[in-house]
Image 1 (cartoon, rainbow, N blue to C red):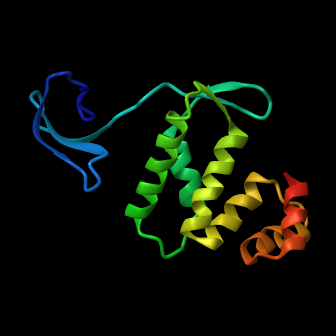
Image 2: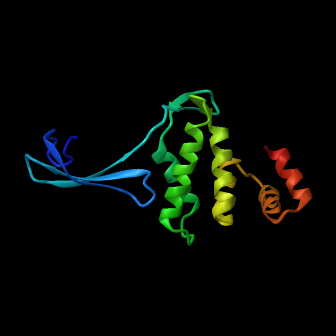
Image 3: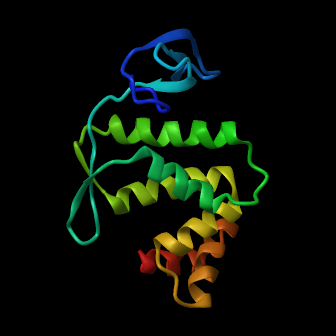
Length: 161
């Protein structure tokens, strides 16, 4: 592992331990050249995923991008970071275990919305507004109707998809 301070490759692991959910290994490292201490995280990756964007472009799946988009939708919401991490890990596991090497950004968005809906209604609406590209107030009404169980709004939301 390259030292982030001096770029030396001569580093040693001083401590390793799993995180609370045992999905990630936290490693404390020290650079033998400059004595800089830093932390790395190691997680299992079942397969390399490729995301097919709406324009047809293919890009490697980026877990950090998923985390950022979820965090934006959860900004200033009373949700514990551990719950967010568990949700993101569950989403990634779901994507990796789907059996496909390529997955559309639309499918990822739907999975994220499904998980956000269970976690926080406001974050769900925020994410949906960007993901579904809301243009008018009725778009919000449709999603709010989904949350409230209003049948007419649910039908309108299905037409938006």
